Image: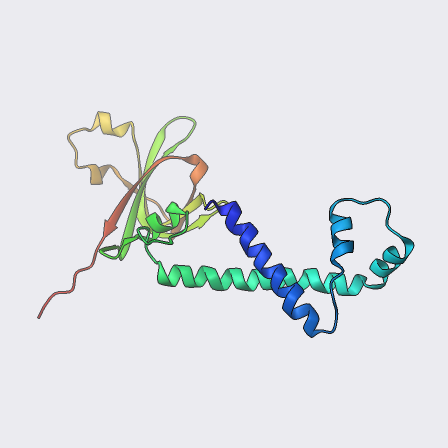
Length: 204
């Protein structure tokens, strides 16, 4: 089932709960005939029905405010439960946000990285730089796509130096970047190499 079908199901569930449970509890009722007329764009509403709408504006606002509030709370609870019960990318009900799982190292129950390092190729006007550092944080946009990454203990080196000093140790060609953290926008990054580090406990 596609995401849009799920959204329709959730909306139907919330409004059904409000119409058939919460609204009757408050001593009110829904005029379904009037609702259908409004939804179909009827232009010939009797004066009595228009008066009924204007007299119940506070209740109508309370209804929609309640629906938005319930949808937000239920959504947050469902999100937390799914992350808790399906924490890995390989989980059955994992979200369709691959960047989250890739950059948290939660690929599967056998591959849960404790430390992640990134190599990011960033092109500028004159040359290309390779940034290398520990992934400190990352941010996704509203679509779940990567927006920017934050690196600590970052270093960089011009890619053009690789050809000039091909015999040197690659680590020696990096230059330390002053500062605690550096932020790279995903729009400026050409590609990303992810290095997962796992900490194994030593048996005494």
